[in-house]
Image (cartoon, rainbow, N blue to C red; front, top):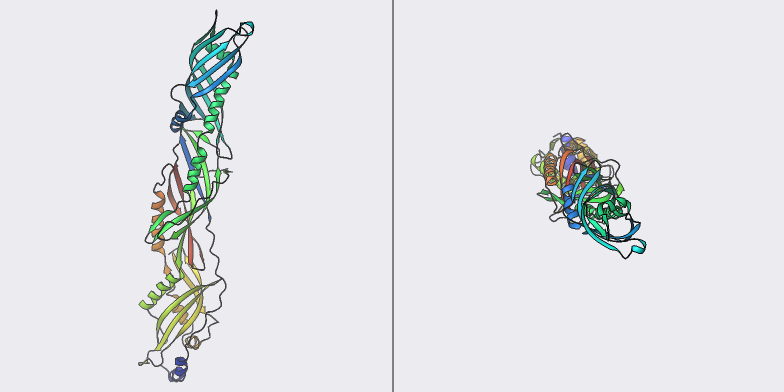
Amino acid sequence: MPSRLFLLFLAMAPFLAACGLETGEPQRTPAPPTPKPPLSRLAVTLDIPAEQLARLFDNMTEYRIADLKDQPVNCGIGRCRLDLLATRRGQVTVKAEDGVLMLHMPFAIRAEMNAPGSFSFLRARGEGEGVADARASLSLTPELALQARTDGRVSLDNGHLRLGPIVANIAQLWNDNQEKLAKPLWKSLDKQISALPLRDRVADLWATGFTPIRVGKAPLSWLVLRPESLDVAEPHIADGKIELALAIAARGQVVVQDKPPENRPVPLPPAGRLAQHLDEFAVAVPVTLTYGRAAELAMASLKRKPPHLAGFRLAFDGLRILPSGQDVVVGAKICADPDWDRWGLLKACGMTWLRGAPRFDPADQTIRIVGLHYDGGGAGLMLRLVRMMMGARLADALQSHLVFNESREIARLKEQVTLALAEPRGRDLVLSAEVKSFGAPFFTWTETGFLANFSVTGKVRAQLPF
């Protein structure tokens, strides 16, 4: 140690010992606000197989599918008055092809008919059987109800109605009055198709989106989605099913806590129209590093490899990282002791304040604080001495320990998210997702820590039984 420096230390020692060498925190501007989670898109295709529709129709289709009272009909001898009751008989079969639902429904007919005019006292009764083959095109109302337009063909056997000496064929009677007699049947089918509980099932899907998904075990962490809007495409009918494309816009975040976060569903909003359906989802998954944890990691690194500069042994008693608007402030409590000071007489400790810019390197998935430099607000003796004796070397040495490799944490989170989303969940509605890729992160810092939002993309599979 040069003699001038030795004399300088001897002269300053009483002042260094007398002063706490503490300086107040540098001035800071407010930290960047915590960004709102990016709006993510969850595109889901709900398939309703024709077999399920057939079972549903068997359970819910009205037994009485047409009931006509005092209906004027052409009966060959004038205008007769007809009472006709059509009841479903047997199972309904359903096919879904070429943009339409095709329903095959057997039914039975019981008819009573009065002769016209002065022969009205004549009343005939008869029974018959028939089959309705209907074709229904579907659209979707804003209230998420299926709207059907049904027509078709009715085939009847040769049941008869006898009016005294006159015998009327039920099939011929039906054919002669097709418009009047078949129309109630098609209306009845329209009503039953519209009564399918589609809105209830979409509401199930909407509510499922609010259920936190566990994505981490140590520590426990949860992917929490907050759906905001719903878009639905017109039904697509083909390949033996009704296909309904939905897109839910949601904001997602990962929350670290022991119990599932409370995330109450909001009511199902009015559905918008989905112009283009992409069978994929994109969710933002954040990786966070609190300032406290970052300081612990930096301190552990400093204790493993304490800096030794310009003939000084340096020890760090504490480290703080504080956010600011354009950078972060690093406060380090340093004890400097000259190598030649065997008795520690000239050892001095104090706070040193520096500033640097946080950066995230996607190549090695590391958070760094770069461009570390002394803060002009710190004017304590210790800071001035360090600057005089070590210059920028102290900032460079400290900066080399402000490196936080998050690759293991990110890899673990990616694996957990992939496995968690792939696991089917739900009872009636079974929902699972296949992760395809993780995008480059959006990096920032907030009042509490560093934040890297990764975009996770993939496909969603949903089974929606009726």
